[in-house]
Image (cartoon, rainbow, N blue to C red; front, side, top):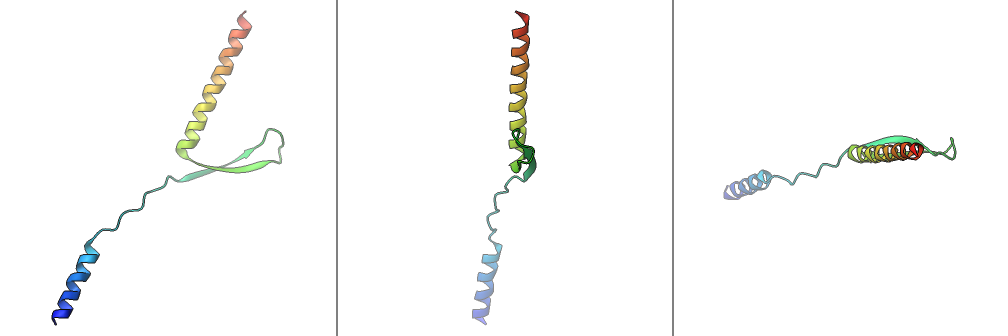
Length: 76
């Protein structure tokens, strides 16, 4: 009887300890990208939403720089 009570106490203690939660990885978003050199060269690129947003911001900055440079070059 004492053995059963001791086993129940141990089982209750081990079940009560919470397991460490797994770190949640950001969900990947996949897109198909084509190469500028060939319309047949299509690749699947997977990145997180934050990575896609960062890439889009960088592309917008580069486009803005090109537009600014074009305006400055045509003025003189």
